[in-house]
Amino acid sequence: MRPPRLLAAVLLVLASSAPGPSGAPQEIDFTKAGAEGLEHLKALVRLDTSNPPGNESRAAAYLAETLRAAGLEPRILESEPGRGSLLVRYRGAGTKRPLLIMSHIDVVPVEREGWSVPPFDAIVKDGFLWGRGTLDDKGMAAAELETMLLLARNRVRLSRDVVFLAEADEEAGGAKGMDWLLEHHADLFDAELALNEGGRVIRSDGKPRYVAVQTTEKIYQDFTVVARGTAGHSSIPVGDNPIDRLVRALDRIGTLAFPPRLNPVTRAFFTGLVSALPPELSGCVGRLEDPQAGPRCFETLSAAPNFNAMLRTTCTPTILKAGYKENVIPSEARANLNCRILPGTDLDTFLAGLREGAADPKVEVIFARDPRPSPGPSSTDSPLYRAIETVARRVAPGIAVVPYMSPGGTDSQVLRQRGIAAYGLLPFPIEEEDLRTMHANDEKIAVDAFTWGTRMLYQVVLETAR
Ligand SMILES: [Zn+2]
Image (cartoon, rainbow, N blue to C red; front, top):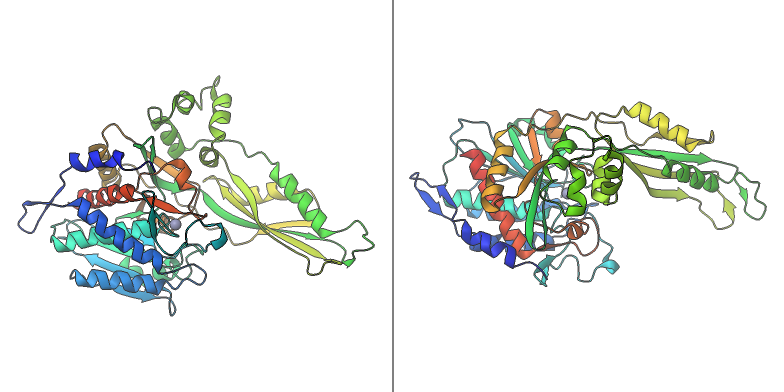
């Protein structure tokens, strides 16, 4: 509805060139590459890989066939039948360590009744391609596929290998995807740098405003809240109903005030956005630590849910389980409390705080899963981060490029733990409001944004692996 004008201009500005087999630059027709990538994206959306159950091997087989036709030698690695991840390597000279470009090919399930188009038909309407996975994360998979095809067809000479990984099971924690791959094929992860989902290119009024490169993420931690009471006939309640207890405890936890706090990544993020945000916010982003304006500015920025999630820890209940019959009071009620915690927080102390917040000896709060170690952020002083800056400024002069702590979790965290500098970038310019279709109904990607992002991704890869 809004797209085309932004990017047409940019497509003209940039005649991209790559050193070909002879070393001479080769022109790449990105309009054509974008259109081809979009067809691959449609095909990937139509292969339903809702997780559970996953069935990612369908998408992996499609990618493998396409890559093979370009002369590459992809491998499909299955953690169990149907749960395939794809890996393919484009060889560079080997003078620098490899660059890994990755995306996940499973998607979250849909609530079909909530969609205004069928979620797996990949329909183009109003300038958008609609469908589950278009943003998260098959758009990235299609752009990465296109990058590999362009490298292979043009026999581009690179200093380092570029490895494309399309992994299974990201949306369900990675046991059948990343965790399994790292356990059974650790040798494949010989990369120095990785480019994954998790960042953003935000546009408003048709213009890209800033590139947020994810260099770290909040700690993902689920807690189980269990209330116990006295089971019995619901015709004679005795005042010890665990459902009542659970609801009251969740309500008290919901009122806990998690204080706002900046860390080096969010500090650089907000400071870097001074020129990129509308006036009502830009006056505040650089003054969060000003003793006078700070408290008011935290409040102003916290009104935007995405900024609020970057400024403080959040917790919200996501699952309730209680009761089995209309006229029976159960003996137990439980909830899953999903928390996204600021890095650097001590989780045992945090758990103690939740218990205190629940304030009921008959309500237990426990870790739903053992906490995982949280690695530090990837450095902004690296060839890949610099390549993103260089390319972004070339394609959108004046654009702000800032490091970003994503509220959501990605597979980059396990790579950072292994010493790989991982960065998140969703290179398709998007309006804030359309970002919210991720994991929701009517997920869609603007067609012009897909082409723009495919070009950006290719150029970032080239710049990093020159
Ligand atoms: Zn994702």
